[in-house]
Picture (cartoon, one colour):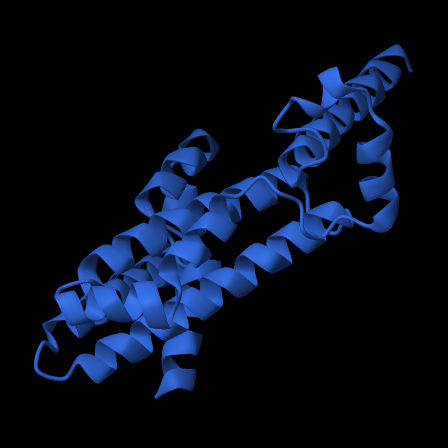
Length: 195
């Protein structure tokens, strides 16, 4: 059953269609919202969200909700690590990383809100799954994946540069990379315009 929850939650996080994402497609025209694949993805997403929300109705059998919360935290942790590592190694663009992170955060918040329906489940999330540690790791600006060279360069920086919370963090790298990609895109566009 754990593997089934993992697969369902992973599909929803990676392939599901959320309402906010459809607003981004509106400039492409209404036909992009009505393709057979889009309609099918929306239907699957709606059914899967409804199914996962029904899990919270299992008050008498909290083991089902515990399995679902375990899968949720494992999938979110894995996705966050993958997004982080792929962004750092330039295997994922900044914008795709931000989009997946927003989706992950929105779905995690929605699902955990449905599943924390009793004190025993809150206790399970906080103590067994180490939910607060998980949340702090998710929002932490500390860079646990930086290499030794980055650690040394942090130590050599003057004190006024160390005061910034973003210095040396993944968020700073992502912002710098997005700025670089934007500059490269602008320079490519201007060279194409000259030609």
